[in-house]
Image (cartoon, rainbow, N blue to C red; front, side, top):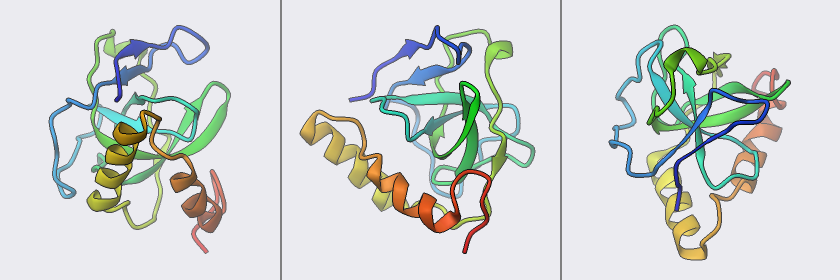
Amino acid sequence: MRGRASDGAKGAGRCMTDSASPTLGDNDLIPEGALAAVLTPAPLDKTLDYLAPPGGVSPGDWVEVRIGPRPVVAVVWGPGEGGFPIEKAKPILRALDLPPMPKATRDFLDRAAEYTLAEPDHAALARPLAQAGGAGGEAQ
């Protein structure tokens, strides 16, 4: 369902990735400075590529990223695709201290998106966001 495109608007430098990205296990680390595909609560049917923060991130990790001027909470979906100059990539602002989204949940959201021909359900991001206090909030 996810395609590849470049975001030429305010968020230039982020690349939307294809679901054919190499699959990582939940414990596989995307190292600092490498591209990570991140599913955001923005109404897109694609992930966006961001630079992994210090210490790296793993698939399922909850992170804070910037979309335009505002920070949002998102989930690392896997390794990024690239397809644009790496120096234009925006960084993940920080990894949140929350339990990762399980691989089974991510797989379910991907299957549901393919079945319904819609983007992964952003409502799935809303519940954990509310529990975490939103972007910049701490887990309750």
